[in-house]
Length: 506
Image (cartoon, rainbow, N blue to C red; front, side, top):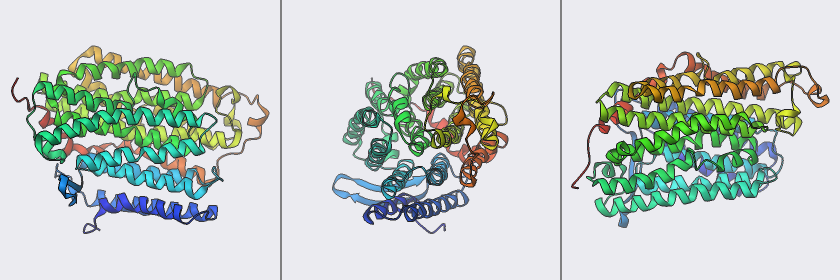
């Protein structure tokens, strides 16, 4: 398998599979489902080949493919993966399989088109994590908006058109600034390769403009306060599978962008303006957590929870910048970056699981309002056990993945400033408050609703999906070492780069 172009296969197998499903017209629903499952399973097997063939002692890019694409403009089809990329690609392929299984019986209209959109989206997201050419990255980065726009706009809720247009406009407009920045870097250095851009000497003024251009693109994707308002609407109106992919994978592309663009290309500006990102991250952690407390829609509550928890990702990334420059504390800087990455992977499993649980209830009750539930444990005990586990993980309970990444970021924050750590640690209170209160109102108590009394417990397919998420949550919570070992060389190399100034001239 090591001789195969694994990254190209992981990108194009789902995309071409999705195109084939579209080309076949209105296939029988089950045929489309099985075809999508087979393609996503094959992609998962290939991604496992990435992990088994990965040299963990090598911090550089591996599985590299580099061929001319648009030679007249020096644009290359250049793919590669380090430990950070491999972890996110594996998360993408695992989630895609679970999304296909989870949506098996929930969509009956245009089934082949529905699964085709998810397959194409999977390939484009893998492309984002593997692209080493800036134009190729931008094509994948923008291309993935199209299938998600269609998923929300066609199969979403009553306000799906509003939500899909808002999602598209926010994310598209933010990335226009990134495109301008990339064009400027090409004009200055004559190369679209990310490694060449990272080697360019830039003045502080240039770095500042580029920093905010990249920030505009990636802050929307995370999403950071105050450009987060598109996310709750998108989640509420998206079908369950769309919410799972959006929360589990697409939000991570914002954090990945900071690691690939802001830190290595404009490190001095990233240090100078780290306080901006840190402040916005703390607002997300504290304020958005309080906003989640007052939600009466389960999906909207979990959406705001995602914004709060993703604040730890940006906090860990830019705390590492300060630790490296202020004190030269490479170990603490690596801890912040590791915590940010573990939090990304952990949040992928937890948020995917929480939205899947809401989907299970919605398929039976056709309502997401918290007041319509209560006493679900009495009729769905197996489902309730999974829900409580994921609620504990979302609250940051030790031995779950939700604790590990947040704890690492809090430790790194403490070494920078104890007050930052204190503010970040408030999520352990607010997160427990809104998540456990949700659990109390939905799962526990007496059955006071005739519809709840008629509920049936999860079937084998639903149990498998939730069990797979549970394995991810518990595996990272109990034994995060394999994940951190996979990413450590690449993160150590990045931390070392942060200490090097790139300022050229005044």
